[in-house]
Amino acid sequence: MGKISPVSSKYIINATIEVEGVVDKPDVIGAIFGQTEGLLGIDLELRELQRSGRIGRIEVRIDTKNGKSQGTIVIPSSLDQVETSLVGAALEIIQRIGPCNARVKVNNIEDVRVSKRRFVLERAKSLLKTMQDQVLPDTQELAEEVAQSIRTMEIKEYGKDRLPAGPTVDESQEIILVEGRADVLNLLKHGFKNVIAMNGTSVPQTIKEISKQKEITAFVDGDRGGNLILRSLMNTADIDFVTRAPDGKEVEELTKKEIHKALRSKITAEQAKLELASNDTSNHIRKPVIMRRQTQSRPQRPMQSRPVQRQVQLKPEEKKKFGEMLESLIGTRGAYLLDDKLAVLGKVPFTELNTTLKSLNKGVYAVIFDGVIDKHLIDTAEKTTVKHIIAMDTKVKPTDTRINITTAAAL
Image (tube, rainbow, N blue to C red; front, side, top):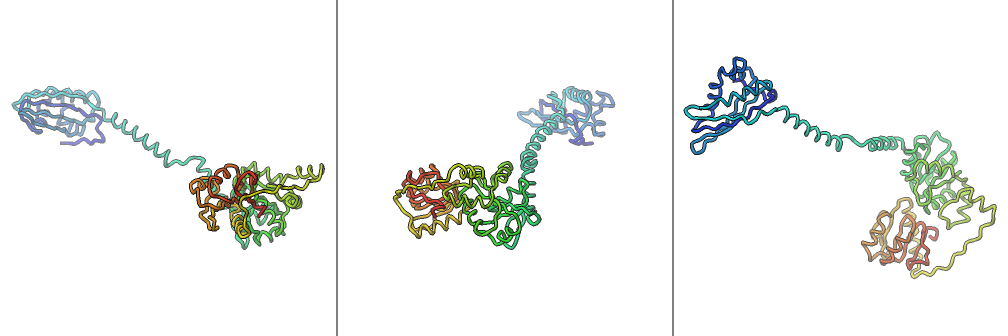
């Protein structure tokens, strides 16, 4: 007998059978073919339909219990709806199987395409979700990945010191000098390709040489570290102009608008030297318009600081070591925690300093970090054993706390 492919079948006839006696599967199949023979005409003869593959293999399951048999009949069909319905109805004319009375009942005719369609729908939903979650990247991620790869390709190593630099440093007459590699990447991102980094706090020989040949604009961070780097540059290199990031910000985190604004506000190196010399306690270089206003209106009065009473004073060896450690932290935004033997207990990012102090509670003698001391940090430190906090600058008056506050200027 022919067997219809499950792929090509469109309908499935599902029927149940009850027999008042014991029969086998061949008995049921024989009764189906025998008692429906000639009933529906030559075109719907079951044997011929099965030979041509329009009716599939008839599946019969029979169970016998207490001398009676019952089971199911399943017939796959590739006929149309009307012809399949006629074949299904023909099964119900079977009244005897062998010597036993029988009853066949067609429960339903299942449209295979409906179940396939349901499967396709559910599977399509699953595939779409997978594609959106895992396969298709976010547009912003794509753009950022491409931009990052371009910036990485554009950055190069310049001079014998192999300093991070943009691609146009050689041919540009005007050069922007920044502190580190991250600053170079940020300026490249916003279209500034004539940029080079010092790559540290000391001035490399490459910078000294290039400053003699090109117009240099020093672009430093808006913190005390920026002032320290400017002093070093003024003493060792031929700097033409100076500008800086807004207070409390670093060049690497500036937007394009902030970069343009800072470069438009640059001042000459001579003006920067005057300001640094006349106001060592200042946290930032004033813009030229402010300086002119001060010099034209009235001379500056020298600042007088009140004597500060501290519970603990820095020893000479502590002052020297703390100064060296603070200088090594410039540009890292990191923090050292020391015990009373001046041994380093650990180094943490500045953003985690408060949390770390709270967790340690005891054993910390001094804290040195690249940043600005604020009231929140002092409140946390006063609940611990900390005696000294050394940083680039402070927003807290030394007289307002028991802790000895020391800034880079004092070191």
